[in-house]
Length: 417
Image (cartoon, rainbow, N blue to C red; front, top):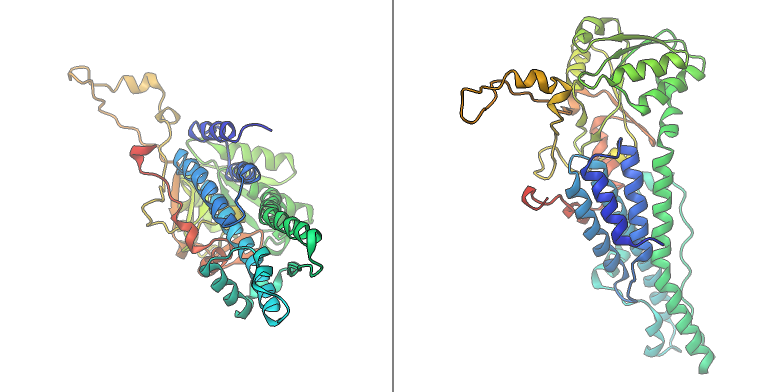
């Protein structure tokens, strides 16, 4: 198996050089890397969760610092930390139940408790609270896993008892890591199938003879529109080209290739065409805890046009794009400036240099931001792989995926990058 450190360094180089395109690919590769880190991490018998958390945090901080703009990296790091805490809490709850059962018996002495994991007071208290706390609606709707078996000690004594205790310790020392890896595998599967989960809801939101507007190119939007087409919905799509990268041209060609009636318009024509539109459907780079959206540049203008003409503004986003941070947090970098060459080639730019000045400073400055921020008040509905949600509900949905203790994983200061 490849060395973990070399895999981490290779992934860091890809993030720094922006070689990974799209939040889904970034999230999936981040989860796969963290799965390798967890599988190769040697954990002690005591404080296993702490060892895994420290290992994931150490790698996660480096990944976040490599490309702070790609918020999906931090999202997955925090999701994995949440998984470790939840699996540890599940095992702790079972252990507390086992201790309670064994405490009732008068035939056992204190030495027989030695095969139980050593639990901290915080974990025991949390396990006790979780057993008394009523389940949330989200928990009731999900399939509940089978409870862990209560540890059993042999009363036969002798060498067989010692061997059984040793085997029991060894099995429990591997169980947390095994459960965490299984949960991470489920996370990777959820990331891979998020487009399918979102597309299944298309027929509920797109109706016959509607006109849909989008901007730029998003695979989620593409699959969503094509899923409605496959359900025999007949509608028309307006695609704003998404300058300066003109990704809308690619989306328009793909929609036409799949048989959808498509009209390509310039970004400046959005206000002129919005009165003919029934719904705006767009993708997102990240969804913040307050329901705000970090999206490709130009979408804030589209959202304002939709609000002006009372057109629903719908955002499609997989759960890996749900970020537990707020846009005013200092560790959130809302924008990235891309190369000026997308707007002006070097030859044209060099004509604007002031060679009479000793420093040769340019008279023309080219600013090419990559992202817009769309406030939650401009969003009508979020469609995720778990269903449709109002912007005001996003913080509760995000709370199911992250732990408060995991928010300390932040990007490093710019001086350390």
